[in-house]
Amino acid sequence: MPLPMPSDNSLTTHETLESGHHSGLSGRFDVPGDKSISHRSLILGGLAIGTTQVSGLLEGDDVLATGRAMQALGAEFTRDDDGIWHVTGVGTSGLVSPTSPLDLGNSGTGVRLLMGVVAGQPLTATFCGDASLSRRPMARVTDQLALMGASITARDGDRLPVTITGSETPLAADHTSKVASAQIKSAVLLAALNARGTSIVREPTASRDHTEAMLTHFGATVRSHTDTDGTHIVELEGEATLIARDIIVPRDPSSAAFPMVAALITEGSDLTIPTVGMNPLRTGLIQTLRDMGGDIEITNQRVEGGEAVADLRVRHSQLHGIDVPPARAASMIDEYPILAIAATKADGVTRMLGVEELRVKETDRIAVVADGIAAAGGEVTYDEDSMTVTGGTIPGGITIDSQYDHRIAMSFLTLGMISDAPITVSGCGTINTSFPGFADSMNQRGAALRIGRLS
Ligand code: S3P
Image (cartoon, rainbow, N blue to C red; front, top):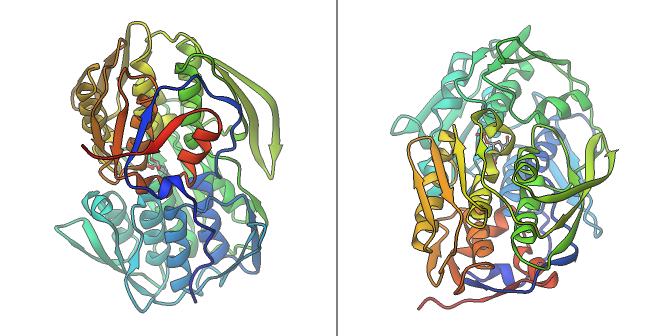
């Protein structure tokens, strides 16, 4: 049975868009549901006993790919006309081997979390994805899953396609991750659900904790603390039973980042973005933009469906450059491309430090962002783990290839709003990965995105 699909949307399905000057963004801007929480609600809902009702799910390509994969593994999904998803789970050891490869498209989160799920159960699945995902390293997850008892083969050592045969009796994990990565942590925790005893994951600083929060919500026992040296430690009691519980997905702070920066850097803007997730492990960009002088008012802070949310009011501001410390990277790892765009309009120099993880995202985001800003006429330098942008005038008048990276596409469409000549972005279909309706929503609030032509 095909996964229930949301209706299509117009402008963002066009591959090439051109972005030009406008007179500011104003009004209320609803961004879609949180991508991280949406993936987890379909995965954990599928591993729970009973039916989980999910409202506010992000119906973007990445999450739908995870849904199709969970469906192939035995979970069941229906969708109301009003957009509420009903996920009927099979329990933590009730999945079945899929009959064909699981295609996770562009989604690193989907593929890595599902590798963890499969590794903890006696079944075999092959994982594949698009050109971008097929270039990304998987050893960071598969090495640990092999230690827990899974049999794993991969192309060129650790690239997709990857085939995993999970273990009926996975060993508990004691894993120390070199990087603060929620994808690594989550894969290990999901594989450990059927292990006997306590599994431990240590990370150098805390990464987003949505898996831990949702596992707790579904009845698992999860503890976490931070040591005096900053190491973040998560413990999970194995042989867990998950019981279905309803989920309200907050709006995605990583998607809110685009209208937020667009409003800050374009004159005349006064935008309200309601019900944005305010998990402190996700709000590094808001803190950084405020440190740069951004007028971002956080109002109506509240808890909805167990998640902290707030309304953001963002007004045009003259930003100034700052040093963004490495310690902040985990809390805004997906936001550096759009921060670099904000920095082109700031007075002085913005240095983004300790951001080597950007090199293994959907693209090598240090190189792609910096080369794109340079091509548009901006001043930027970079090395292995940092990027420095000096504010000034951006001539624009160029075409950027998104290279299958949704955040690259949206970042350069945002740059086109302040460059002297418009910027054209090709490969905009990838925006549906995380932000269906992006271009239409931007235009409804005052932006000037048009179907573009490659000259
Ligand atoms: C995510 C974790 C982050 C982030 C990604 C979503 C998640 O990746 O970049 O977009 O939902 O767990 P890493 O954990 O690899 O840093």
